[in-house]
Length: 356
Ligand code: FES
Image (cartoon, rainbow, N blue to C red; front, top):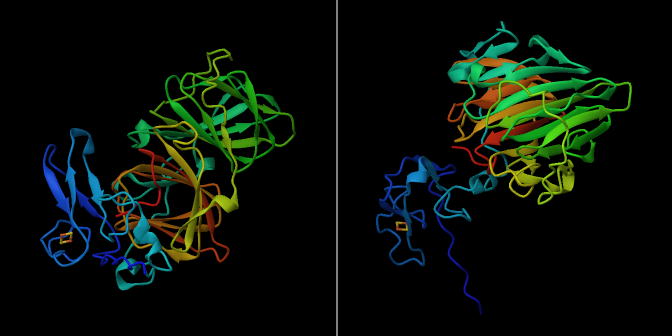
């Protein structure tokens, strides 16, 4: 009879943030019994577990050691802790501590500023620029605190938009309203609402709107750009090594994350080594405060709620965006009985399921 494998103990339901010394070797506890987490202290003796040896490299910088011991990428966190309970870790918005947190009601140029350079933005509050039939707004740039990505909103009325380029950057788009097509360096693709679209470095693109209704798009650029370059011609430089550029929103591809779900849109599988785009659902709840190692921009597609940081919070609703610097403590609350639908772009790309 096949012997049952022992299960590791869950040391805790979140990872351990750690700054390793390059060249140094660490022994990560895989059994969960060590009193010196996340490292081995010999307590695995007599079990079938062995510590996992990890030698840090210069490139490692900051890491998250798995704390729940259920990761598939030992010794690092892969988000497995989020699925060891039925619900995502939650927080009481009416707790005594949370009742002391101030709601920001005044914006600065469309941005409601929270702690640590985090903000909630209202697209309509941000001054637009125009080029032909295209109205565009810079929502997130280096000038508003981002280190790695820029984020723009485009509104394209009938006809062809001007050709746009962002040099050597990866460009990731999300159409939210209107029907049309996108031409990327000579190839044309349909624009479906809530689908991810990927434009490779050095390609140019334009939006074709055959209808009456404006097409609305959000556009992430990494590395950053202050504005689109409208001076380039459309050319035939389509990178045929990566032919699939549209990733449709498909509920059957959702991954579970406690009682939340997410679907990866543009990511490494589409060809982007830098960024990961996802779309996800959040039930009515307030996530426990947590951090990510990545920088993130989120757009609320449906529903409403509140974005919290250490001692400030701001309302957020459909069409708003949130900029979240790496390592900023935060919590997104959904107040909508029907839940929230959000779309995000993270840099560095990877797994939006990893929090600490
Ligand atoms: Fe857990 Fe050694 S104490 S692997």
